[in-house]
Length: 519
Image (spheres, rainbow, N blue to C red):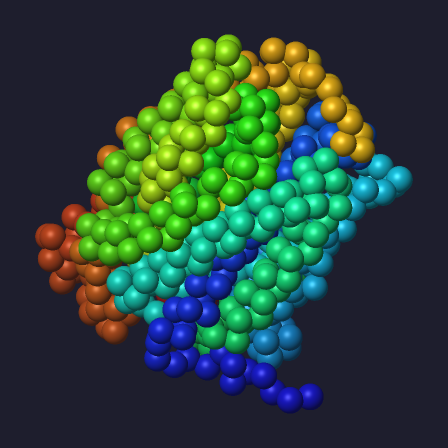
C-alpha cells in the first residue's frame, strides 16, 4: 500500500490551509443544524412516534456521544501506539472513519415501518461518526501551530464556513420544503441527502489540508494493560477540571451552550406553533441573517484575537438574550392574536439578522479551548489536547442531552398531539405557551447568567504568550527559580496552582513514568 503519511507532514500555514481546516465548520452547522432541528418533528409528525419517543431517540444518541467523547480523546492522544495511527495520523484517522458514517443521515429521514428501533439505530451511527470527526477537529488547530493569532484565524475560518453552511442549509431547507411540500416526508430525505454530500466533501478536504504533530514530537505514553488504560482515561478526563483556566471557560460557556441547545430543540416548534409561520418561509427569510453571520465574522474574529474573549463575549451573549426576548414577545403577541401573522413574517427576518450577529460572537468562545492545553502543559508537562477536547465535548453533550430529553417530555406534558403522514391537527393553546416559556427561561435567563460569569475569563494573547514562553524556557533547561514575578503571577492565576507546583510537581493527571518534574 502507498504511504499516505506525507499528507500530514508539517508545513507552512497558507490561505489554502485555513480554507481546508475551515471546512471542518461544515460539520457543526451541517451535521447538527438540520438533524437536531427537524429530527423530533419528523418522527413525531411523519412516522407516528410520540414526542417522548422522539426525545428518547435524540437524547440517547447524545448520551452515547457524551460517553464516546472522553474515549475518543483518550484513543486519539494514544493512537500513535498503533500501526494505523502512525500511518494515517492519531487525529486525522478518525476524520477518515467518519466519512462513510455521514451516509446515515438520509436514512434517518426515511418513513419506514421499522419504528423506534430503526430511527434510534440510524441516529446512533450518525452521531458516532460526528463524534469521531468533531473530537479530532479542535486538537488539529493546536498541533498545526503554536501561534496564538494563527490558531485564532484557523478557528475563525472554521466559524466562517460554519456560517456559510448555515446559509446554504437555510436555502436548502426553504427550497426542499417549498418545492416538494412541507407535508411531504420526501422533502426531509432530499434535504438530508444533499446535506450529507456537503459534509463528506468537507471532511475529505479537511483531511487532505491538515497535519498534526509527528510521533517524534509527542511524548510516548505507554499503557501496560487494559486496567491501566481505563485508569488513565478516567484520571486524565477528571483531572482536566482541576485546571483553573478550563474551569473558568466552562463556567462562562455552559449557560450559553444550554441556551443554544434549548433554541435548537425548540426552534421548529416555535416557528410553526408559536409564531405561526411556515417552515419554508422561516428558512427562506433566515437567509439574510445567515449572510450577516458570515460577514460579521470579519468583525468578531479579529476582535477576539486582539482583545481576548471577555468583553466581546459579554457583548455577544447580552445581545443574544435581548434577541431571544424579542422573539418571545412576537410569539406571545401572535398566538394571543394581538398582531397578525403578516406582521410576524415581516419582523422575523429582521430580528433573526440581529440574533445571528450576536450568535456568531458567542459561538466563538468554545474555541478558547485551543489555548487551554498550553496551560495544562505548564501544569503537567504533557500535551493532552485530545483529553481537553473530549472533556469539553462531554460537558456539551450532557447538557444537550438533558435539554433534549426534558424538552421532549415538557412538550408531551403540554398536550402536544403526535401525527403521522402529514396529518394536520390543531394543537391546544398550551403548546405555543409552553414553547414560548421554554425560550424565555432556557435562553434569555441563561444568556444573562453566561454574561455575568464571563468576567472571570483571563485567556488572551498576552497571557497565553507568557505561559508558552515560560514553558519553553523551562523545557529548554531554564530553572524554575529564575521566574520573574510577573510570569509567576500569570502562571498561578491561570493554572490555579502555586508556581512551585507547576511543571509536574503535582498529582494532576495520570502519573507517567517518563515525565520528570522540572528543576
